[in-house]
Image (cartoon, rainbow, N blue to C red; front, side, top):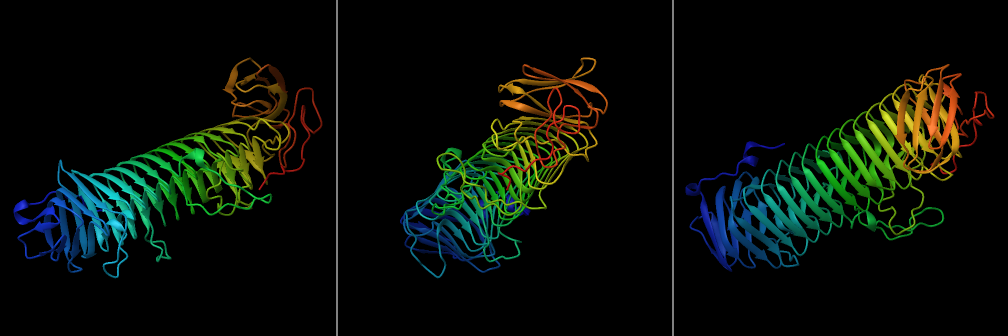
Length: 564
């Protein structure tokens, strides 16, 4: 991924060629450096130290394709009104180092005029592998085009970078690989972009970040990769597309997009798999905060996400095994064909579904709340969809379905708490085929109209009880026959239906359910109390009711009309 030389920022001045920039000219004693007016051309392998100011000029690397070139910026300022400040036409690899305790500036004046057959469109434009490193500062100002472009690999191992770019801030065709560094990026498109449109196999066009500090304000995506994207660490503050409050879309009465196509404005986006092994993320994005056209794996890290669409979206599987995920604002909290929660601490707020397992790919793009009408999500039902919760702590505050699986729901462990919805048409639990619980703690408070219980394949006691209407903030508590409190939790939304399952609930035992001002005695004549929940229906309530269980509600019923 990185070579020793990628990390090396040292150099021997005595073995280097000094290029002294002065206004619209330059001086150098090396035969490997050709100077024509304000154009400096380097033709041979070696180390070259650039200092001074070059106005409306360019440094060109035009060496053999086996040559490695080391450029050192030692208090250098290079501007070019019509092209790149640094242009690597040919080399094996170029290393660009900022000298310690120096400030360096590279800039473009607002247009790019052709000087050869290459489409030069960046302040630093390289047709070869390019490594940036150093212990100094580099400011890049791109009034047109991109900040830095490599048509091969772009590698950064150290340094401090301030980039203002009309298009992408950093862009690598084959890959962008960052080991460390400090980055402040303002971009008209993506902050950091990796894509190889010519690679149909998906082996290139990836983005990998080991560490670093990233402050990115982008009109496009914050981090974007055409294939896979992986982080191991780092600190990220990303504002994309104007943030969550700027999301807007208009729909026809049939839910089709009637607006003009908009740029992608996601926080972190991968065309392939998205693997997040670590890092601290604060993301405010108009579109999805974390997005993958493949699968998403969150294996660690801390996430504070505000978004106009999905907090986390994967066209395939979304798996969370560790880390801390806080979705402060979203349309749907977590969405994928399949969702696996095995660990971590998750808190999410959603204006629609908290968890949504559905088939197909996400075409919502820039859909969301914040000004426009949000139509039906284009995710369609799929028999392969499921939600599986086996560990972790999960808190859901949803105005739509709390957990919506267009297939099955399985709970084997962890702690899950669901608040909402507080109006009819949705349920705290909504599944299409079957649901079972065999372990863990599960508490859900919502409206009784569409309430569902776990099904008969459950091996852990579960109760669904209709109570009198309770206000948001009411406490739900369950006690055994001795008065010992088993659990207690405060619901975030108003409710009149409570679903509880935990290991302490056993068949034949009697419990007291307290919900705000309501108190209900429940005797578990079987493991499943209340509706079987196979197709949804009204939960049980005090004093008995229709159904085959004591206090049971009306079983069966029709699936919610909003199921997709």
